[in-house]
Length: 240
Image: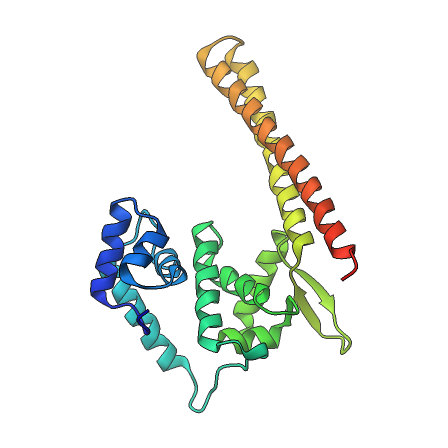
């Protein structure tokens, strides 16, 4: 397989493949590239429905230039444990970030979350995040505050009484529960509207069906979250 960054011609082929409805794996096969390379390229440049080869190429050039400009002289990439390839890890973090952005999470919050999830400990201090991401302490503080409000990160003191920011499956459970509960208000308002607009009218039926749909989805989500939590808990408590 060819090494190095994608060139403009390859990006044109990716765009053509997406337009033809090809899967990432098929596009990768035609370019003799890893599927992860294609997935990362598409997700960090607008996703499958908005990917444009020319814009993707310009964005890559801009990111490369920015990294060169912001990296201090003599700075080295943080060491990777277990023989990991530092560039591969960084590229994977970029892909994680792009996917989270596509899901609606702001860019800096996505970068922090991706960084936390790709550490073995699943936790970092503010200073460690500043060093790894090359951003200001204020940016980290703002991102953590937002992620905490969404139940995606929690704070824990370490043995040196420093705050560590932690991610684990329990946080995804809490976030899922919060998301399901957020539908309760929509359900209530929809049903109030159905009563105001008159039972049996087209508008009332539409609102009532909306309420039923959201209630069904929320109840199913809550059940699935509880089941997944129990399964993961059992896995974690099983002896090695």
